Length: 244
Image (cartoon, rainbow, N blue to C red; front, top):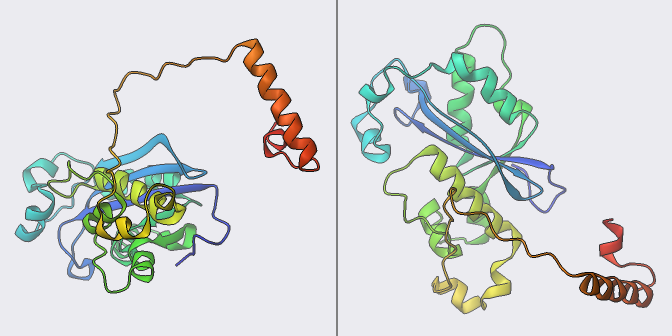
């Protein structure tokens, strides 16, 4: 599994699946795939989400987890019908997955059932397992997605049942908090451990656009003068100028 301390690829895809059961070797299949895209550690508006007809019954225990029924999936596409779009969305990205061996195992099994020679998903994508990483950060602690949401103050109040797209969105928030160190800027270590820090709320996608207030000419001039002073005192190392 990859290490976030190494140079990360520019594009990452946070991925989750729901399935008919727990073991693809027993014929279980994927019934939902949800993905969201990160560019330079920022969520974009691009996502991939599909429900799939597994052509088999779903275990009752699995339905209790995700709430997806056999009836609901009867008119949904089969994996073979969406595989090109799925691979195009994920190809060459680093996949961020919680308990990656589970999802990767199911995806590779689905690919193996298709005609021809198809590469494994971990052959065309880097894989980062947030569960394995969380266990290294918090040995002996609970590291389920819900536990990590509580630890890092990520809102999971809408997660009554597991859903691939919602879980991918939540995991993206957890991953960014867990690997970015933002918590240390807000809370002391004791508060972090107790989980009593403010919860980061997910905003509605249909919220009104934020009002943009532009600076005046005088404010812009003062800003430029300040940057020039910083650049001079740092020997030409002002980061703002290097980005222009």
